[in-house]
Image (cartoon, rainbow, N blue to C red):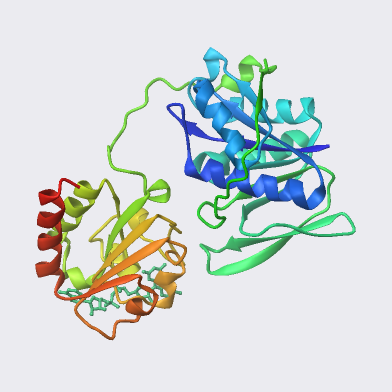
Length: 323
Ligand code: FAD
């Protein structure tokens, strides 16, 4: 009876959402007195696997079969379910990332488990029933899932659970899963990257802009500032509604939640619905020409000024200092 947490990697590098899932799984282990094991699939350096001990995980299972080099939904779900059975894990935790959204229901079906997808809280456990809060209707409402089965699958919403370190030494064991040819009914022929930009949910720095930018033609300086900082770009809802930027960049209550180390908000008023998706950012810098803009109330640093004057000066200053 243990907790198994699956940590995603991209090209061998674990994702931030995976560390969040680790921290969440460790908290469930502490809550229930169960041991926690982490599962990594695909090629990951030994050093990176050992570093998982930083998050309090003392057992890591590594599945490194050549056939699993690329992510295949059905096959990965089969492997995770197989490892869960092997370890007699009754709680399976993963991130509700793009891949996690496909994996979680498949794993639950394979294990006959109840599923909480999009979890935003730790469980409240009463008489073996686990109550877990989740965001629904594009985060417009919060629902409570009641998990009544012995085995449970929990897919954690990214960027809602803070990563915490509690270092222990880690034992890594290799595992050869039983996978069928039918698990590979989807064949990945080629992976084409459409952008080299930093992924927004994973970004450590986010440069975000709002209606104060006046139109899509003015986004060049936002892109440039993001490039100089190695940041992802984001926007407010009206901006993506107007088609100035893609919907994938919309952050807030009805968009993505982000929790970067640095969030720079340019020409965004700071409406409560926008703040809902960004308030867990470690440092918030606001650039707005209106000193009364609500965003300044939650800012760590504020610049009252015209974005069209401030942003080019900021870019020049950063370039001058080779940042
Ligand atoms: P505005 O409110 O128009 O603010 C523009 C800001 O730019 C102002 O503060 C202005 O002073 C400043 N400005 C103007 N010119 C300049 C300049 N030259 N230099 C510097 N500053 C300048 N919004 C979201 O963002 N995300 C959501 O998920 C979201 N969900 C919503 C859900 C619901 C149910 C509802 C009702 C609303 C939602 N909204 C959401 C909309 C939200 O209420 C605000 O309307 C929106 O965030 C405002 O966007 P904005 O700050 O870009 O524009």
